Length: 158
Length: 158
DNA sequence: CCTAGTTAGTATGTCTCCATACAGTATGGC
DNA sequence: GCCATACTGTATGGAGACATACTAACTAGG
Image 1 (cartoon, chains in turn green, red, brown, cyan):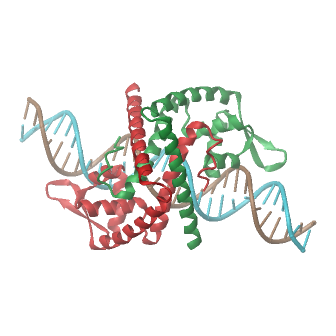
Image 2 (cartoon, rainbow over the protein chains, first blue to last red):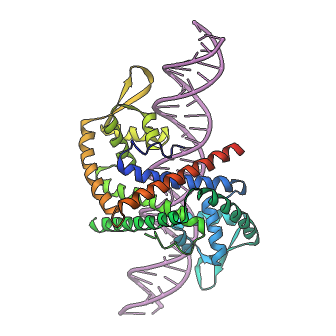
Image 3 (cartoon, protein in one colour):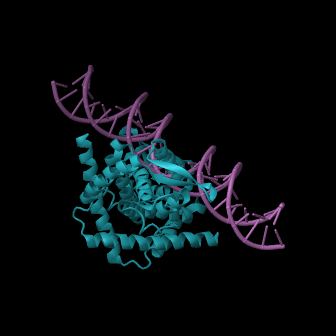
């Protein structure tokens, strides 16, 4: 993996963006590999975990919480439902919405997901202190806020 | 932007991954917006800047330095060449390779790119100290190394 | 009521990238 | 020289996500 090979010679903005981008890709990839024999990718596992923790939720709620669009979320739930890991129920109060719940089979699979997540996280934290991780998260959040205002401002101006 | 809305309620691994992922997406998006009236996206601008700085390069060299695959890089160069921002020249020493160089028009466009990059970077750095940025980069590199070894190990085991 | 506006979920097209496979070309051992 | 190997650039198919547009259904104002 050429993670750090383009640290010195690339143009400045690319350093930030491509490092973050490459890291994000690699995280996704490592989870996908660890989950591959469960036939789950990271997004599917995330939906499963989120639904397990929060009970019957609409797809829009799930999408918002996971930072995905509604279309992408719907596709994920299609896949999970096809394997009977979650089930859709009609909402008695609103005939537009599906309430998504985890099934017994889903819970069982999720146990294995948790185990592997723990192992992988331990490997990824190697050589990175708790304080550093917290700082990383804090800086990323601030960066995210700056990005949000940049993007918002941009829309105004247009 | 729901950058921080899923900070507290999402499952743990998702916090790290999705924060990084969302940040990367947002960075790309903000650059794309700032460059949109130049008809450039971040990757194209990166290729342009990299070629401007390092002169005639093979596509493989460019790909490696930018952390992209050769196919994706080729497509980017196709687009830039179609707009006469770069030009391909045959390598007298190796008939397989294209040597890619920036054109006058490319250099002119790049000036504008640099100006906008400076402005955007200043906005993104808002409230983040130089030290924090360096630490962010350092932690990301370490995380990247951990990811690389995880992915490598995974291949061995398979 | 009933009409206008909003929201839930879905379908579709696009974007950006990767992985794989391929054809043409170099290179190093024999 | 010759062959196996490695490498360059391209074509193709797929993954993952977005934006847009659409249908169905809810809701609030008149």
